[in-house]
Image (cartoon, rainbow, N blue to C red; front, top):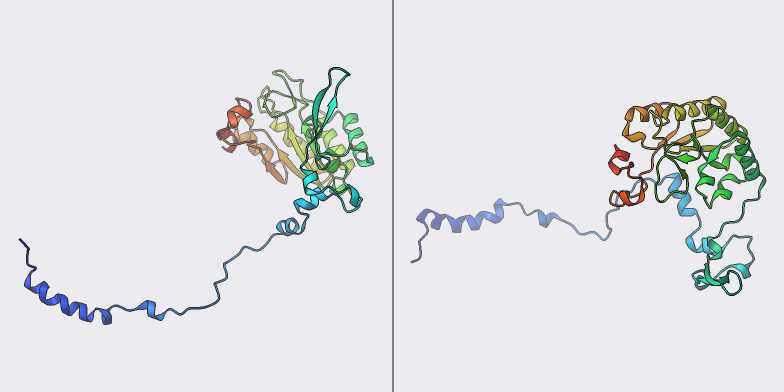
Length: 283
């Protein structure tokens, strides 16, 4: 059985519908169409992004240097082609896939590279460039101008107490003791080279109570005394999450403080040493 609405509601409803158009403002009627879309707000470009946008493209990279003969420039198909050769003694040859020519780096031969390497050996210093077998060492050490050359000095020896699976640095639970002359020798070498930017990193020294933070800080202060204009970046370990050691290095006069997490949280147990955890790195 249908239920009748109350009389008052039945009488008022038609009147309400009649006056509704005049009571409610019709804002949509005031809208106007325009052929021009609003200009979205954009952040101002930085000098770095300007240089990147004005720089060479990937096709230019594959195409070789401007001074390279045209007949040596590879086409796109040639640049992606994999070439194989037979290597080994007669009767036991095996097939070997060569790297494409555009992926190879030249053997370092310039004078700036030789001078830096000679100074490193003479002062007993180590670099990540050499220990990690970096293929870009000739570009970093062999800049046309001294101020354009960069180097990554590895402090506290060439032997690490951790064994990350991606790293080529030697490992040991009991590495040699610290060289007390290393901060002074490092500062002397860098002031000699006249570099514009230097990165200081180190092996992990879990055998030391402070993880080597005081040694790190002393080196930075020595560099700033001998070469105040040089920019110094400290690429440190995690110091086992001890923020007091982090603070000691951060307040030593450096320009950039950096630390690598290396990979994602999910891959950390498979890539890094078990003592290096993702939460510890970002603490």
